[in-house]
Amino acid sequence: MADIHANVVALDAVLKRVGPVSLILHAGDIVDYNPWPREAIAKVKTLGIRSTMGNHDRDSAMNTPYGYNPLAQVSCHWTHHQLTSGDRQFLLNLPKKFKLSVGGLKVFICHGSPRDLVDEYVFPDTSQETLRQFLGMTGADILILGHTHIPLLTQVGDNQYILNPGGVGQPRDMDSRASCMVLNINRRKVSIEHIRVEYDIDKVSNAIIAAKLPKALAERLYFGY
Image 1: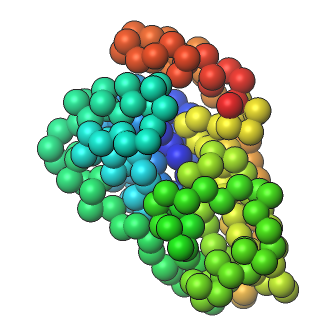
Image 2: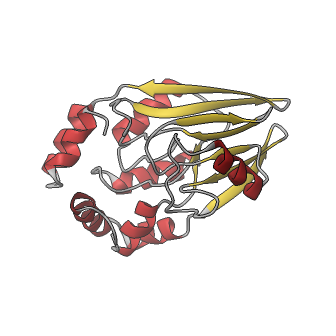
């Protein structure tokens, strides 16, 4: 999964829908935009979710929303002031990348891209040549990215994959349902299932407004942009 963005209602719905798994990977942005940053951090810790650092994790911790649009600036400042010093340190200690081996395959995960680990956007229309370069840079069989909130699943070669599971807490592909992917790896064979999960958007929207965050952040959840 990727981009929880402090939406614990969507996160809980995703976890319930997917059920037990051996490992949960998160490609960054645990916090910001939605009204439960501390609760989201607590769930990541409690569940042992392995997460990379996202730009909103870094910038909410440091209160530095440089280059953000006005809505995101307000949200980032608000989130910073909700966090404890321990929360901020946890976010800043997240790795910008990590590698692991699963079922004999090498997995590389980051928020942005292998050449700009936190801030580069890799959209579904990225060229196959660039995607191959990313795989070459990492030496990975499976490359997992976040940041765009838009699902991406591309097979490169016989058994290499680049994927973005889409946004859990703020989808942006015109589908309001939370998005994630489930990888099954068995004896170097891979199957990937893209899952969409409905959740109680009204509950999140009302909480955003009650927290005095920008109303547009609540409205966008209904439209998936």
